[in-house]
Length: 95
Image 1 (cartoon, rainbow, N blue to C red):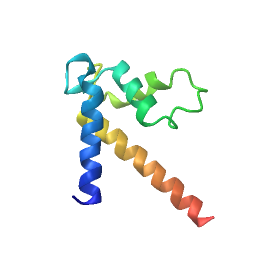
Image 2: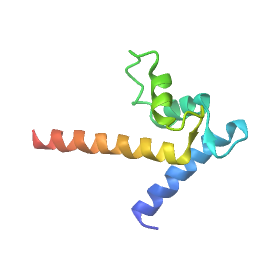
Image 3: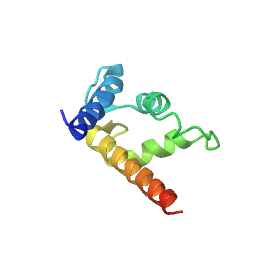
Image 4: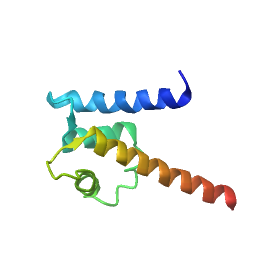
């Protein structure tokens, strides 16, 4: 498998790992998203300054306001976060 295919598979596997906690494998609840972020992206929330960070992230991800984050909403988040990281490293390399 190529690196990109592996990354895609890992994205699916991570979503599935946390989405199945409450029995619905199609979506993440706020609690499941919180656990996912704490375990898979610990540096994303590491500052700890914003106590409402999970609520804000969840609200922004839940585009259709159904109180759940589906796979499409999750992938948009991963892609946006990846773009931010890419921009950060590009700027850092330029300096």
